[in-house]
Length: 382
Image (cartoon, rainbow, N blue to C red; front, side):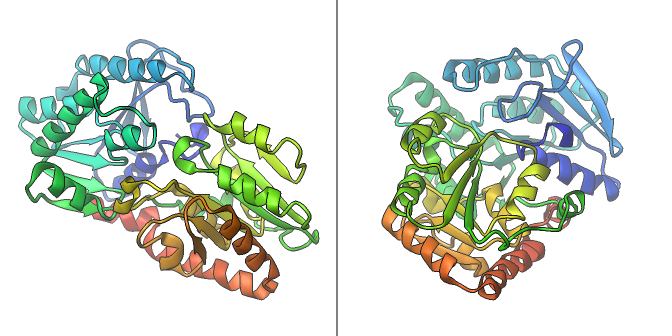
């Protein structure tokens, strides 16, 4: 998995490797095509099996699709689910099935395996569907696909024997949706602490006389990055560089907004180790979220952990309760979408002494190492 790694899909690879050290046997089944991978794995036949850490990865061969194509992604979900039913699952003798699917579509298979093999079905919630496409994507709640996903959401919630959620407040949504209480474990995203050993830890931070703030992540509708560009334009006369690493449906629009401002630079998505190299030479990290009801249940973005691992002070533009930046004491939270407040926060951080910024960075590093490493969270899966 690391050779495909931009951060996508790393969670279960690292958790499985830690559980293998505790002598758990595991099988991870994933589609062979993912628009978030740097490259897709090579496959032969319907299922391709790779052994690692005493367990196995099974790639389900899927057709390629264009990342910006909604229908391509939908077809890929249907294709993956359809092919799963041909998997010789009894061969692996599972004691439980854990489904971790952004859209819940693979929950159909989890319910099927639960009934066929009479084993527990655990549902991991990485995103709340269909609330996300309705609120963030602007899709009508009367859209046929949304109605189907709404039915599946309730069915999966009823059928699941236990839940793992990346968002701390998911249990509120669960109770509201099915009007009953179920076992929910909050297990956030995490960081592989040894990643820093894979990159050069010598940095040029604070050495070039300029203040550099970095955003590293997806450029989608949920990320509300227009406010970052607007803040950068407000600060065009200052010696501040703005670096954006990543791709997504909003990138072209953001590049047009930034066209006349050479201090705003865009870089294509790269491997996690390459991102860390950039972060280790920046002065601050930025993260933002749109103002949606969805985020009242919390978030668990990898960006928080990446920035904290690199000891960066962070500016978070969000209205999220218990924002990780506030919990860690490693930066500044400003209202979602407020470019003026973002600009003020950037100037605030830039005006601090190097020692003051390093103290904020150390706060974040201590927080992520104490709470959000794979060594820590893998034990919660036992």
